[in-house]
Length: 331
Image (cartoon, rainbow, N blue to C red; front, top):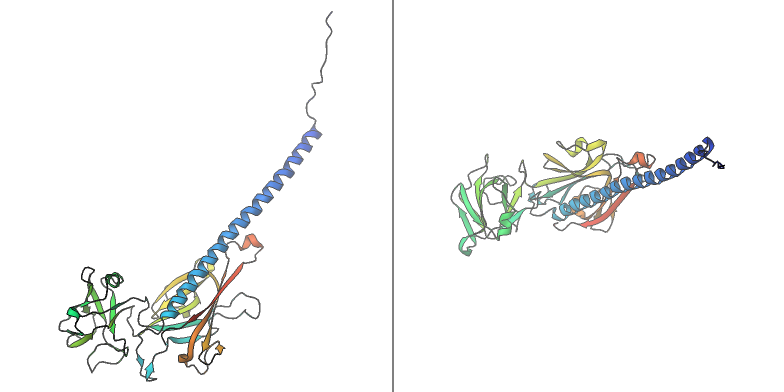
């Protein structure tokens, strides 16, 4: 007679299943919490890096323009001397900086004078090593110092010719001091480095003027004033000029040329401050009286902040700041 053996074939109880599911949920919750924190940190850090890059771009642009400010600018009829590199030192004129006191002030703006807003120049070398070149036609060719200089210009660029010794322009005696002439480039030649120029519309016939060896060809921006002006401000505001917008409600560092064209230089900005170092060693927000010829250097403080990741940081923007003192070279 066979003896039957019964084995325990019971399943998992409901209580055991609930315990296992609870433990699994706790583990998954912990894993998700770590993942979310890491993801939030990585996403926020990406924007912090972007802010750092924008600060670098902004400070480099301002530094380059300050160092080129004042180059080859003409004399001023009102002062009888050279126009200063800094035309306007606007203090506390822009957007409020979201910084702790005492730095929660309005941002600044600054306007610079320069012969070329794009810092594009070529030195003339008249034919056959002559010291002068007489312009005898509306279209004429000026040899320049190198092929690299030629590469800096394009057909249809507009230029002025400036004499470095006194920052004057080759012109007839009856032409206004600050009018001079604007020329349009109609051709370039790298093999025999030269630029072909033609008088721009609305200006006097260029014949019967003399270009000296060493005169500078300076690219000028519309509407072709003498000198060009460059204005930096925090925008968008009406003071920054037309044509530039800032995404996502941000503030941006803006560069305006000749009150005509405004470009966004850097996004994710929060503050822009200029302080001016004078010849007597003092540092001020703006010279008083407003004699900008006393300015020998500019302290630039640029502040950036995060925008799109603020919700991941408890609605707290991360603020970064860079500061640099830039000497004015062309006073």
